[in-house]
Image (cartoon, rainbow, N blue to C red; front, top):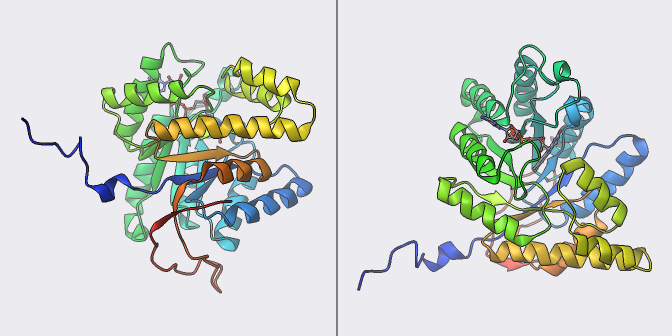
Amino acid sequence: MSPPSLIESPPKHLTQAPTALSYELFPPRNAHAAESLWATIRELEQTNPDYVSVTYGASGSNRDTAVGLLHRLLEETTLRPLAHLTCVGNTAEELSGIITELLDHGVRGILALRGDLPNDPVEAHPPGALTYAQDLVELIRRVEQRRSALLCAGRVAIGVAAYPARHPESPSVEHDVEVLLAKQRSGADFAITQVFFHADQYRDLVVRARRAGVSIPIIPGVMPLTSVRRLRRLSTLTGVAPAPELLAALGRADDDGESRRIGVRATVDLANAALEAGAPGIHLYTFNEHAAALDVLDKLQLLRPERPTRRPGPSGSAAASAPVAAPQLIKA
Ligand code: FAD
C-alpha cells in the first residue's frame, strides 16, 4: 500500500481556509448615483469583505471618477480596493502613469484587463497601446519593480479575467485556458470569472486550467439576477447567453419581490455549487445595489474570518486591525 500523499490528505488546518468575499462596484455617473453608491458601500462594509473592486469604464471613459472613488474608499472606509484597469483607451505610457498614481495612493490590488474593443480599430489600438491583458500584467510588474523600495508594505496583487463560458472573441475554451496560463506566467496572482449560469462551466474551467498548469485561484464571479431586463442587459454586455430556465422563471414572477427571491435563489444555488467544486471565494457583482447582494450573502453562510471593525484613523488611513480571529459563519 502506498503512503498517503499530502495532496490526498492535506493537514486539517489547511482544508479549513475561510472563503474569500469581494464585491464589484462601478463609479457613479452623477451625484444622485454617488449618494446611492455610498449607501451601498456603507452596507457592504459591515460584512467585512476582503476587497471591493472598482470597474474602469469602456476605453477609460470614466478614468477620473474611477480613480476618485478608489481614493475615497482608501481615505474614508476600511475597505481594500481592487482597481480595474484596461489596455483599451490608453497608451502604455498613460497606463504607467495611472498605475504609479494608484500605487502612490495606497492601492495594492489591480485587475488587469484588455477591455472591450470599440468599433473603430484605430481607437482600439492607438500607437503605443497594449494589445492584451497579459501585456498590462507585465507593465504593472515593471512599474512595481521600479518602486519596490516604496512597497515594503506589500507586493501588488494582480488579478485577471477568466471565462467559464468561452470569451466571445476566442476560438475555443482551450484557447481561453492558454491565455489564462500566459497571464499567470506574466505575473497574475488570481483570476475572477466572467458571469456564468451553469455551475459545470465553472467546474470544467477549473479542471481544464489545472490540467494546463494554471495554479492561481479562480474566483467565480456571480451576479444576483433579479429581473429579465437586467439578465438581457448583462447578456448583451458580456456575450454570455442567459439560462433559459432563469429567464422563464423571472418572466413568470408576479412582482418585484418574487423576481428578487427567484434571482437570489438562483445566485445562491450557483455560488454554492461553485464552492462545492472547490471555489476559494465568491466575487459578487452588485450593480451598485446592496439589497440583493446581502440577501445572497445571508443565504450563503460563508465561513469567514471574524475581524474586529476597523475604523479609519485620524489621517484617514484605516487603523491597524487586531489579529484575525478563528473563522466563523457570518450572516449579512
Ligand atoms: P485578454 O485576456 O487580453 O483576452 C482578450 C481576447 O484576446 C480573448 O479573446 C483572448 O482569447 C485573446 N488573447 C489574449 N491574449 C492573447 C494572446 N497572447 N495571443 C492570442 N490571443 C490572445 N471591461 C472593462 O472595460 N472594464 C472593466 O472594469 C471590466 N471588468 C471586468 C471584470 C471581470 C471580472 C471580467 C471577467 C471582465 C471585465 N471586463 C471589463 C470585460 C473585459 O474587458 C472583456 O471581457 C474583454 O473583452 C477581454 O478582457 P480580458 O482581460 O479577458 O482580455
